[in-house]
Length: 163
Image 1 (cartoon, rainbow, N blue to C red):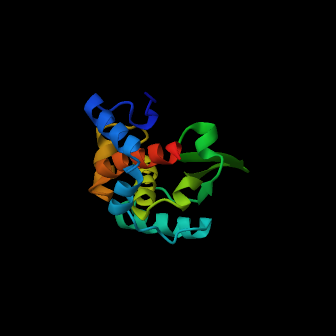
Image 2 (cartoon, one colour):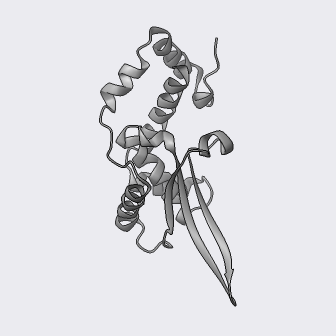
């Protein structure tokens, strides 16, 4: 029995259902039926514009973003699908902060809903640094189906790993 690392924290009956879908070879079909539509956000510039649109709608008063890019090294090196960082630089007598969001390149080909979920997740870190109750409330404010999308993203990653 293989370990399902992306859903290891879920109850055993959920893991058994996912394992049954994998054994039958139908997990990909189930996800394709639910999230069949891709997105057109392919370049870093398009990703920045997409992220800015969501930020302007829900987080107008948050600090500005300076960079949003796809990062090919992200999943392998940091075991993360997206990161939010604040880079501080000294410029003369001032300390200048630059906020960056990096999204794993797996989302370049993923369904549109999964890209939205990871962008919402990283934008929520502008207001809340930790994964606490306020953080997840902010995520569900920006994407009402956030928790379902997070679970289905874990299924998508499991399915990709099984290929």
